[in-house]
Length: 214
Image (cartoon, rainbow, N blue to C red; front, side):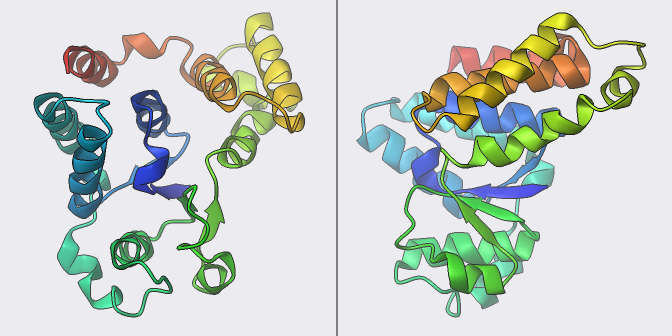
């Protein structure tokens, strides 16, 4: 599944890190444009969540390690004017998502991302509260007979993984759940179920070591 995340869901940085980690783990593919990253840099500095230097370093890491997810402007420029949004910046995001073949746009700004017109174009609009519920489908097949085991090449899932996914599903079914808590449960459940030890990924080590210093 390909997703495009609006700038307003990439705060705090832990959410961006989660979406990138799930891309690294092949749970989904987060596609992005230079327009999006430039906007993210401006906004996160304006909101005093990062210094300009720190924001620039994070953006450089994304460009370096997730370059294959980039949508160049010349691939979507012809779609901008016709994108169904009243906001000029969000028209860029919609056009980039369409050019990238995204399945979902994740945004907390539903006014400027109208779900019905975008559904006609093949794009589903979800808030960041809704997206983990749909992403939990990733874990669901792994609990079927033998399916999760084959993902690891092992004969059984760890009890810890089963407990994590069960607890995640209970939280996602609760409308009062704490979304950031669910974010991290989803992250660790998928990491345990798909790769056992995410930290052994050489790319992951480099990415986290660089962003930790940003």
